[in-house]
Length: 293
Image (tube, rainbow, N blue to C red; front, side, top):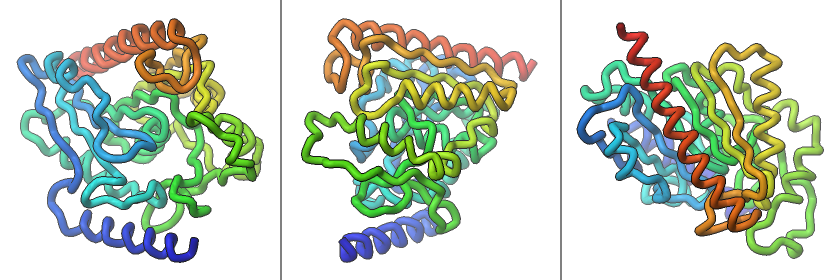
């Protein structure tokens, strides 16, 4: 375990060095909008699968006028192998890089992520005012322990661990088909950690769309999305924010590959969540257009 951890630290150090030395983001892909460019550009984040996210409908988004930047942050050529202690400064550089493109001058930046990417999207938006909106699908409301097997945070800032909720002791031999929900339920009972690791979503500089599955068997996305909403409401969050949580829908909100829920429930979630997402982007684009006039 110690050898793995030292190797991981070395990889992260090389990653940070690469960020500092490069003018561009090492593992990303930019897709310019086609036709009529909307007033919103998107940063698209993957989850615990690693690599560059490949499940967004880039063709549809760009055809609707949304420029997109897909961003890998682990398990790509120039990023760490493990999702642990990933520096948030990497994403700040991506934001700056995207906003510097001439065709995106004065555009709003929306960060969109699912699962661990949803956790990350909320975290980044809580820290960087350049982000003007968030789409968080089946997200966490807290920063959790990383997924590299070491008791460290998923994310770091200025070289230091961002406070996190460690995984509670659990018999992992009981887990089948990516059904980790009981691990996360137990972990969220560690209130002393949760209070320090809860994402400060009230600092987000724009509207927030949350999507969750009530039958999520990966983790408790419905419960945690409700925690996000409660925190926003208790802090009198001034921007539009709404949660759509779907009955009989699992972690993917999709009937082609399911982690919890029923075929019908996930199909309904897929259809409705796509509509809600496009409505949200349209609303943000219209808000930005009105602010220019």
